[in-house]
Length: 435
Image 1 (cartoon, helix red, strand yellow):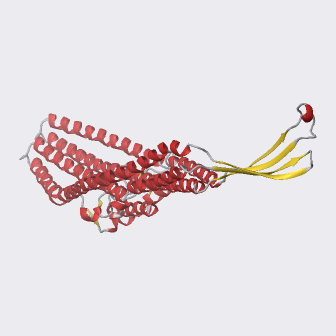
Image 2 (cartoon, helix red, strand yellow):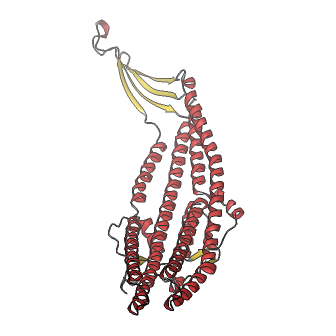
Image 3 (cartoon, one colour):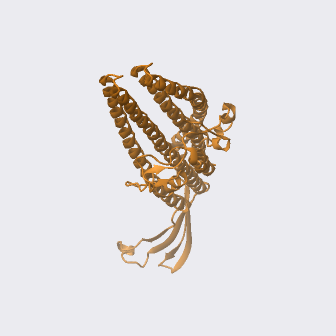
């Protein structure tokens, strides 16, 4: 189930950044980049994570160690061989070895169901660890997707910063033209230049954030010096909304719930082992005795039955039973937590998608129209610089809000997929018109 979930996260997030949509993403290049910029796609990023993630690599040793524990559990207790001499090297008639008795015997334990109990516990432990491994792979893929989105988001922010710089540059030129014509005081030109410098700082800040995001992404596969400087994709390609009731039906596929169910099977095996250990282990011995006096041999046999072990094992049975009950209670609590979290994420996703739709269709187009009219009025001397810059700021804020809402939607999708193991991207994707 979890391997399917990992593939789900793999495939669905890839769809979010379908390279077929990159042609209109506006992110293929920036003014500060050259044509030879190296990039990476999400498919390669997740493949690299699966192959080289340091945490996943370290966890492989735990799997190998568990293989050793399972092998140990399948081995039966060793057989004991003993050799005894009696009635020898004493005094009187027993001074030498003429009256000695020599016994050679072999002893072993009758385990009954205990051996199978050890094997079942070891197998359940292997299954539990295997589930944990798949969850760790899924977590690593989800974290890579999240860092990929953050990198893509910073590229979108940088793209906005380029537009902002161009607008600030055009503003300086327009104000300077009016100052030269004596229609505007020098103070307005100083303010425009200061705004341009401030926007340059903002651009540089985003450049640094993008560089850090790229480094964090590369660290997912143990790379400290990334060979790429960009990620491929379109932050404005968004998933369609999936009803909460549909998501709710997928709770049983939750990786976290699967982990608890695997843990439940381990606790059940441990309880069964503890119960089987309440039955005493009988020890049997069988051998042959030689009588030196008559040069005869005789068979010797014996059995050893521990006394009182049943009562001493009651505590372990109680512990195992309560551990199992705790796991079942945790599973019930987790189901409630997952359903509640899923509802909250679903509502937040719908809100983010609504924000994206409103900004892209209603707010930004109107502000762009307002900016054109305000700039025209400013050039004619009908509006002040303050009014013009105010509309500019509103448009820039709206563009930033569109990017942030798109980012938030993608992050919510990753959380939902991680929580349910369900591919939301099998639904129709909705490209967003952006300006």
